[in-house]
Length: 101
Image (cartoon, rainbow, N blue to C red; front, side, top):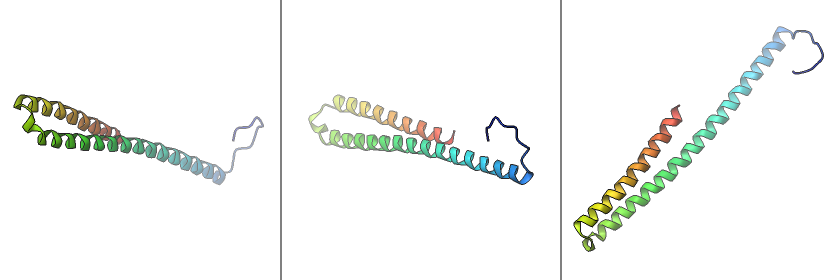
């Protein structure tokens, strides 16, 4: 479409066909952008879910070993793990909120 030669205006049906083609290209590019964004968010969510699973497993192990810990040590361990879990959930929520925006 870019040329240094002067050309006649395209006929109406040709101009409409070019407009339709440009609309299709724009839609394809937007779809690709959204697909890549969704893949990135899905990857972050998968990472977060794995981290949550690991933390849950760690909590179960800590609970099993709690008989060897003082109540204060166990409570401190649970607070630390709860904080990590809360941070992971916050990151997942943030990733999900970006999906819509």
